[in-house]
Image (cartoon, rainbow, N blue to C red; front, side, top):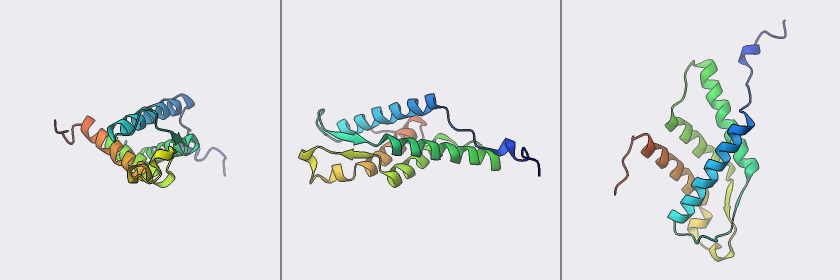
Length: 132
């Protein structure tokens, strides 16, 4: 069989610049979630960038799958749902501040962030309205 038989079906990895851009976006959104939930500005937290990059690549691969095998682009809401899934699965965010050891919000920060991502995209795409 020729080596280039499925060459057009090979996954082309997401560019590093796009990964960096998405990491910065997730970082900013995570900080805004912390403020929204009432955490102090100097709250210690950790972001596993390896897990975050893994989530970004997995979502990009899923988008490529739909493009290649179903000839369709997924919309922003489905993309947000994929990110939420991988955030829940890989758990890249952790509150490390000792003051929040027994705080339920700190323990469930990845779940809160997944909901935040979905709600943010739904609001921006005007699928739902935020109440004043």
